Length: 97
Image (cartoon, rainbow, N blue to C red; front, side, top):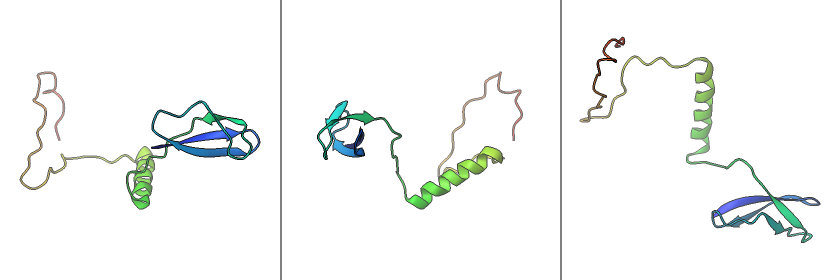
């Protein structure tokens, strides 16, 4: 189920819940019954806790001005190897860490 936002000219915005992709362009306002047009707004995507979400936003803002420098490949975990792309003649001349 998805949440869709509509705007009544008299009573303002309200939400309705419908199956994904089935929302009509207009619905009747729950208060006055007048046709209300659908409002396209940014989706609310939350896949984690609020503190994790805030930390990710803070990290992204900081990295905009102070990008992190990577000096080695990250670990794949115990007993696992990270596979890298095979070197091609064009890539062999690039500097390596």
